[in-house]
Image: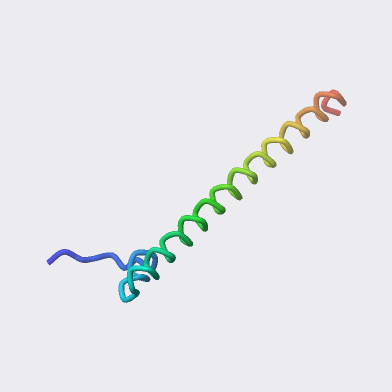
Length: 63
């Protein structure tokens, strides 16, 4: 018998009606999109900070 992994996202709508399942799925899609956007913005800010630090290091000759 194969073990089935527990998934809160996958099983959370198991007992909901079709309309509630649809709304739950849409909300989860929005949450995933927002999380992806936060990661992207965080990565861009980290890259800009690293570039600024490198620029200052270069500007002051690595004192």
